[in-house]
Length: 405
Image 1 (cartoon, rainbow, N blue to C red):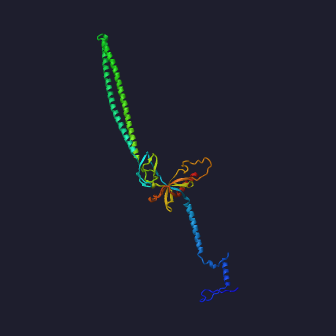
Image 2 (tube, one colour):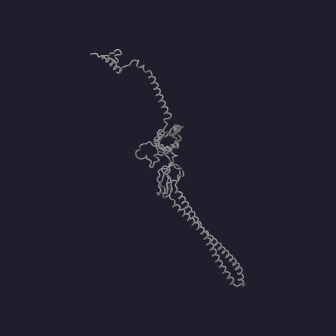
């Protein structure tokens, strides 16, 4: 093989360094040996990175410490955090409906408007109800007039009773006089000192007086019955007056009910009423959502509520506000699962049974400021986590109770 000579750059200035093809072949074979499996570098190469071993030791210690901390955190805190994404913002909204049937005269609020308690919402045409009040006033006046006439008739009837009683007294006095005369004339007639005709006249007058007495007594009884009848009419007149007053009060109440006012403060939603619309009793016209009294309804699995108790703290994340956490407190736990309160509860006693984990609604009070409550409207999706560590004592009490201690 012919050797070929290579010269390095700047050959004119530096000594000539020649490299033959044989030298290149030897260098290439040495590189291949270093890359071959099982090749061990000289000890000098390992000494070029003396920091590697301490770094690996530190990393291992940190990893063990982090794992121990995470294990301790789970045992003391993590395993007691119960969370669910089946949670929503809720509020006890009030449906506004009409008590009366009538035409809507005006709607005083707008959709989504914020209102205060007592704000006028809607006005129903009131002319029909003012007419009812006028009719009730007329009935009251008529009943009072009838009562006055009846009282006047009672006075006349009582005067007739007094007159009849006076007639009875007069006839009784006449009878007493005739009895005395008959008693005086009877022995005289028997002795012949007086004629019998005089005794007969006295006896006849006495019989007439008795008849007059019976007639006068009947007149007294009749007059008293008339008084009683008129007094009953007076009671009927009073009842008519009370009935007319009740009717007037009802019409007055209906008149006031033509003005629909807000029973609570909040925001208007689902506004369906329009001016000129005819509404029926009980028809839903709008809804008031009390945005200041919102709360959270979180549906936890039945396996998550064993340690859950009212008063436990909660963390709330709103899907509409990523990265923002709200604080909350468990207020109450529903005394039954959602299926138990459904319109058609499941009947597990019939047919095949497949066990399904039930969910229990939990009410949580959310702690949010005015600015947050403007956004937190009912229906928003949430993620809720409850710290149930305070329920460990209750669980221990249950275990002791079951153990009979």
